[in-house]
Amino acid sequence: MLRKSTRNQKKREIVGIVMVLAFGVLIGLPAAAGTIVGKVKYDGTPPPPRTAKVEQNTEVCGTEQQSEFLIVGPDQGLKWAVVQVADAGGATPRSEPPTMDQNGCRFVPRVVIARPGEELAVLNSDGILHNVHTVSEKNTPINKAQPGFVKSLPVTFAEPEMVRLKCDVHGWMRGWIMVTDDPAAVTDDSGSFTVTDVPAGTHEVTVWHEKLGRQTKEVTVADGGETVVDFRFSPK
Image (cartoon, rainbow, N blue to C red; front, side, top):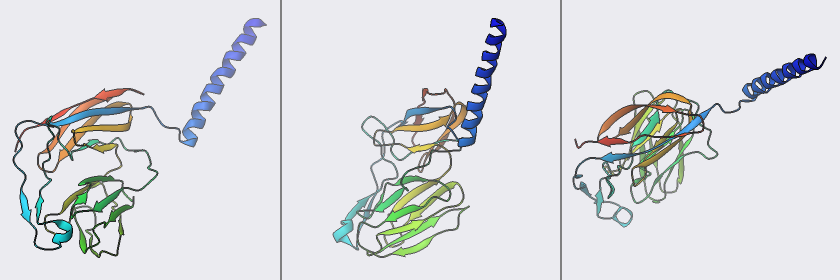
């Protein structure tokens, strides 16, 4: 009787575990995931920044603007690179929508990540006329004036791709919108990045930079673990 009772208890435990797992799938509990961290660096001495002479709205824009297409920190860290875990999907929902400001006649931040169908708020802190003009292949282009009194202009993109953003009023203004459902991150001033909620397993990790192109590495992520991967770009 004791052995039979023990076997029945084990059966009940197994059934209970199966039910818990099935319930987790039904309510959408997160799958096994980890984190990818690292740094993107630039090999060599960066060229001096280009400058553009400003002849309009100088009270807001200044008289000269420096380019931001290649920003390298003191430890060779490369800013504004996008690190993306290809075909991972299922990025964690955000509590607040992403924003890109027009501040000092620059797009701030220069690179932002948005998900397909997610509303991106293009702000206008300058209080002068700007123009939100996107250049893309898969998404319908946007070309809208944004006067100073329009403090926020909502835009959305249906298809994943890298979208270029410019202002036709101020020709030096450039920005980028990475539209993706995959886990992704943008490097900071030191070239560092952290990509969270990456499904456990082996993935291709791609880094993109507007001046230097792309690189890809294969990375294996453990459940609950932190995987380190670094990238280095040569001058072009």
